[in-house]
Length: 155
Image (cartoon, rainbow, N blue to C red; front, side, top):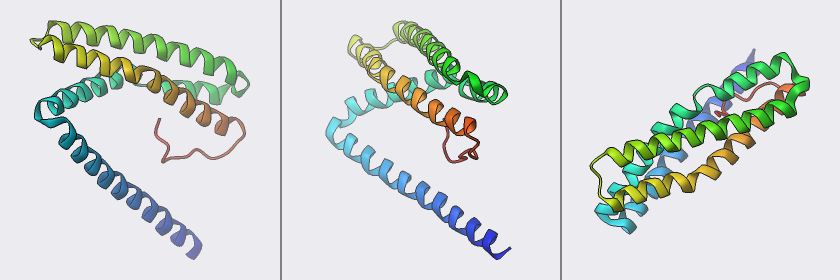
């Protein structure tokens, strides 16, 4: 009983300290970006960042949970799920990029702002797919070898 309470306190402290460090780091990085870019470029960056997260949230919603659930039913299919999941995520990510292009194109932005929005999204596309592949692979391997799931690892 005492060990469980100690573990709960240690884990809670780790989560809270992680959240504090993330918040402070994000604030410092954003302050540096704002200082370097200036008001107009920072506005473009923030707009691009907002569009990126809106479209990526819509594009990736549910895939990781779906593949994890399906793989837990048949853990022998890890390689096919990893390949098909990555391909499906890539396909939907391209569709998201096309939708972003259409939305940005028909909004009343200047051509420079439009280029910046599309370049920001295109530059994050490979990183986004690599991150999905890496986290999904880690999560699926943990499931297959019987390790408990990591709750703090959000995919």
